[in-house]
Length: 552
Image 1 (cartoon, rainbow, N blue to C red):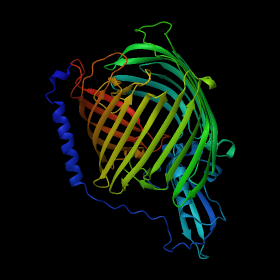
Image 2 (tube, rainbow, N blue to C red):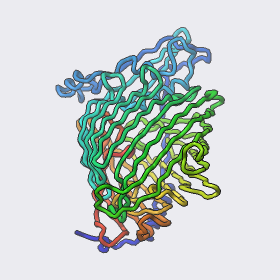
Image 3 (cartoon, rainbow, N blue to C red):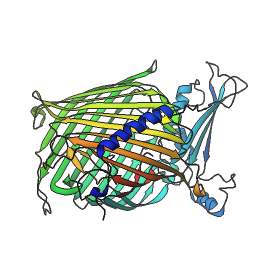
Image 4 (cartoon, helix red, strand yellow):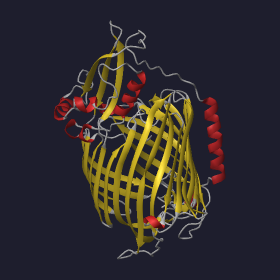
C-alpha cells in the first residue's frame, strides 16, 4: 500500500496554488444573465387584482407525452405510483381563491412546495384574465417515494452500510415513514421514523423517532408549530429526547478511547411576531430547557475509558430574531438542473437563558447563542454567502464551551454548466465541554483523510471546487456532474487524548456526481478519488469515497 511519503507535494505549495486558483477564476469568471418570467400574460397585474381561480396541476413521475419517457416500464411506474393529493398541495398555499393578489405570497408558496422531499419541482404561474383579475396555476411534479434504502458508502477510510425502506409521501398525503437497519464505525441500529409536516391538516409538524442500537437506544418526539411563513404570527411546541449510546474519542481517524453517554432533554417554547413589515420580520421566542448529560464507563470496554464530567442545565430562555425577505431561485448551483431557493438576505438571532441550581441544574450559568447571516451579489452571476455565530456559557465570569464559528461560501458562475465554488469554515473554541471537541477529517471537508482525523478546540478548513454540470441524462433517471477539488485545513488547541497536532493538512482530488431525478431524495451521490498531501506517514496515499450529500 502506498504511503504519504511517496507524494512529492508540500502543504505550502498547495495553499499557494489554492490562492492562485481563486484569483485566476475570479478574474476569468464570466457574467451570465438568467431570464425567468413568472407571467404567461404580458399584461401588468393591477395592484387591486384578486385571485379569480386556483388550478392545481399534479404531474406524475414520468411525462408520457415525451417520447423519451413513454415506454412500458415508465408507464407501469406511473400506474403504481399514488400521485400527491390535491388537498396536500392546496393546504400548503398561502393564498386562496378570492384573496387579493400578492406576488410575495406566490413566491413564498413556491418555496414551501419545493421544500417537500416528495416533489421534484413546483411552480406557480399567475395570468391576468379579461376581467383584470388573476388566474393562478399551481404545478408540481412527483417523484417515486416508496424506496428501498441500500447504502454502501465509504468516507474517510470507513464504511457505512444501511438497508431499509422509506415512504416519503404516504398515500399521497405528504407523510414520511421509514424503517432502517444501519451499521457504521460506531454502532449498528434499527430505526423507525414517522413525520408529518402538517399534522391534522394544520401547520403543526409531528416527528417521532425510535431507535434500538447495539450500544443503547434513541427516542425523540417533537410536536412543533413553527413560523411556517414570513407573515406567520405565532409558533410553539415541545421536543423530548432520550438517548443512550457508546461514544468515542478519535486519534488520527482511529477509535482511541470510549465512554457511555446518557442524555435526556426537554424543550418547550412559544413565539410571536407582528408579521412581515416593510420587507423585514421580527420574532420573539420564549421557553424552557431541561438538558441532563450523564457520562459513565462502558460496561464491556474494548478501549481505554475517558469519562467527561456530568453536565445538567435547566433554564428559561428568551430570544429575538430579525429576518429580511430576500430569496433567489437558482439552478446548477448545489443541485444539477434542479431549481433551488437561496436565502440572500440578512438575518440576526439572539437567545439568552439562565441556568440555576434553584431550578435543579448543577451550575449557575448564562447561556447565550447569537447567529447571523448576510449575503452579497446574486446567484445569477457571483454570490458570497456569509454566516457566523457565538455560543457558550458564562459560569460566574468564566467562559465554558464557548465557540465563535464562521462560514463563507463563494459561488462564481462561469456559464450555464460551469461554476467555481469556494468554502471557508472556521471555529474558534475556548474551554470546550470534553464531549464536544472540534474535529476535522473526511466527514468535515478534508476529503483525503480518515474521519475525525484531528481534534482540538479550534479549526479552519478551506475548500475550492470547479463544478461541471453535464447535460448527460442517462435513461432520464439521473443527472450527472463532475468536479475537481482541493482542500486544506488544520486544528489548534488541546484535545482530550493529548494527540499530536499535525498542523496544516491538504488534499487534491476529482469525482463524479449523480443526482436522481425520479427518486424521493434531494441528495447528490458522490464518487471521489482524493490524494492526501500531509498527515502521518502511514496514511493511505489514495482515499476512495462514496457518499450521499445534500449538495454537489
